[in-house]
Image 1 (cartoon, helix red, strand yellow):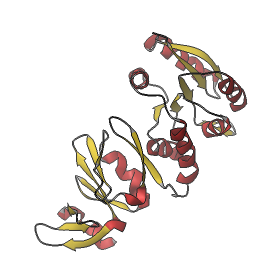
Image 2: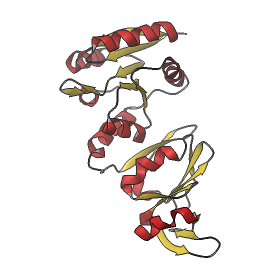
Image 3: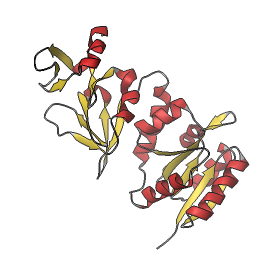
Image 4: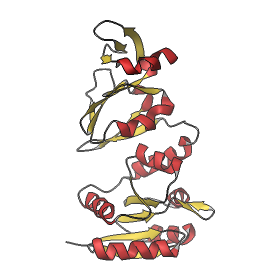
Length: 247
């Protein structure tokens, strides 16, 4: 079996050297094709060569990883961001179901990310285009779609179509209405609470997150519940009823 190839982009050579050492120690199945400390050189290499994984820093000197993605043509690599922290970048990554590693890189997280690549299909051009769009729109809360990855595929869903989300242990069920089946995502509901908060979603129960634009009636009987668009009933915990009053 051919070894997976990877390329690294970071404006700090020390960060590249550190990641190189971690790959050699903990992910020897990866073959490092090269690295770059600037967008121009990285774009030239990636437009002329095929790699399986791109390890990309988000915020560099006067540049960002998104500047690089915009300069690439047709690409079919897995994208793993390696970043100290970038509020809008992380939000965009979560929206687009793309992987990231926080600096300093934890060896176990690196191993998990590589394993994930080895067991999944190549990231699509469509997914990376959505990632770029997410980053541009996230700053102004203009995000329109969210990527929801189930066991077999990634579905791009309009945020305004989501009626509510339900926690099921470490999974989250997304209900879209119109008779569509729920989408089951293997992430806890807490991951989506902060992500969707700017778009009118509130946590009305330990297990439920609702789109306030889809609420129709609050019923006081049976302990209190919301009647959502399409007829779905969502329980409201006594401790969180004040959120409805504040609305």
